[in-house]
Image (tube, rainbow, N blue to C red):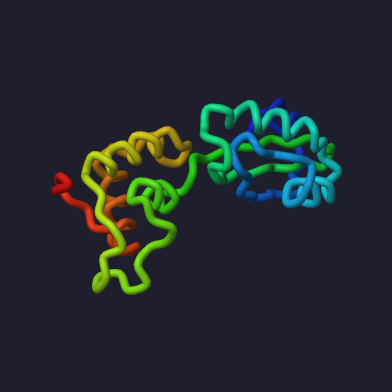
Length: 155
């Protein structure tokens, strides 16, 4: 049962907005401007806060951000690290995966690459309590579906 304080402090949610914004590159221009503007949210406050939170990443790194807009024109947002596929493409040095995964190998990476990606993904809110081994297995599965071969060591 919720306490009286929780009920009184709960704010009605107007919308949940999901965007992919380059790290440190949030500007009031599209796609950020129109998405937040329609809910009358403070664009500059979001841009400053987002850019501050993502400054440790290289510029142009695609960051997934989920913005919760409330009816009183306030907002909260969570930033997730880039997708596993983006990291795999960077590690393998390719633009896109294989057009025929399982038949044509697009590139090869090592288990060390997989482990490094898993360590980064473990900081994400939804992977926080997952063991590193489980995250690594998931990454290997993603790599296989992209046509990227995972080896113990590169020859």
